[in-house]
Image: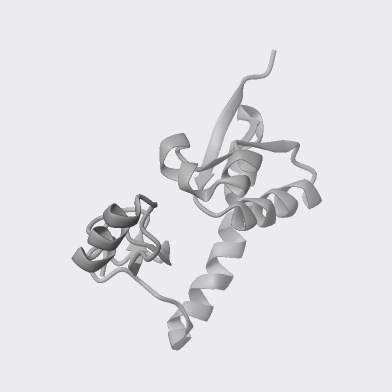
Length: 135
């Protein structure tokens, strides 16, 4: 019996579907979990650990080779100055998302408490998904 493993995790369901389609085109059977939940409510991304890509353990090396070719092409593109990298660790896994630390300022918090509503404005920052650094 073949063992199914979590090959990779993604914080963006669109990116997960692109990688899944690339592997399926190459003949590797795979599927995503937690995709629908995170698509419906993106705030659950951190709690669920992202969208998980599952595949058979026997196909893991082939999948790495296929995605390695794609990653090499992306790295050439990023060397041209097109990609964003984390200043803390140098990782290219950076997104412009809602802040996880200090996301509400004092005015938003006070107004939200007075009106008894969820804060209506949150800061957006560049967030590294590898080292969790925000800038």
